[in-house]
Length: 346
Image (cartoon, rainbow, N blue to C red; front, side):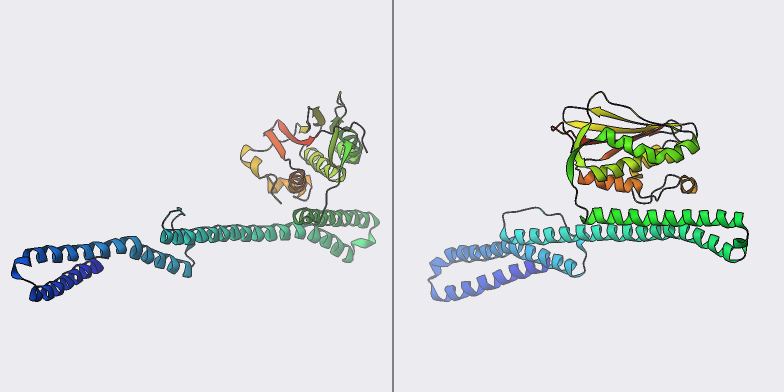
């Protein structure tokens, strides 16, 4: 920049000198003072115009060249933020910045997706191996001679079947989650009674409830609990939330399902007095395969995808699940659904 300014000054002086010499040879001596003023004015004007052009145009072009060089090197983060201007050349620079910012965001998003993909593959590999290796171990033990003992054979076959059931449940949950995310599962919205649905679902937990001597109750509301939603998918949401509470509630504990009917919304609560969730884990429990305590979660059962499925189903319903919890006191999961104006369920 300084070199170009020096050249501009030298060039302006040279041109002024040549013009002055030519005019001096062709005019009268008394005009020389005026000639000097004209020559100096011309030289100063030339230098001023050049410096102005350098500042307004050449400097901007130089900046644009540097930006294009950064784009070539894929250094999007190194570019300045987009600031719209009125100068056409400045606008070109702004558009390059805008493009670079878009690409930088795209790169960051792809990096996050790649990290998520790696975590997902690592998690799913671990989750699939556990029931597979368990079933494989039981079968190999039977092959090694244990099959000849009826009592051992029945015990190991039962355990192998349980491991295969766990594997099937995991695969089904993965497929369900994938289909919801890709939009393959279409929601069928209809009016139905949420209380009656909950009453139908609790029966399937009877064996587990009796085994742990739990109290599983559905509080009967004073008003009809009619909502507009996909009955099958909300059934899955309730099943997963109840299952989660039953699994993480100790013996002689209590799990309660209740409803609050408002003017436009119906809020469903699934409350337990189980182990509780640490505050630092609350924001992550709806992630795939996230377990608060991996060393203990395996004994509680589940695929690690139940709450993730809850999250995605409710998102399609344009709502979400919330949770409050205290260690040693239990947890309360809740979600809202639109109340049906039609008081006759389908």
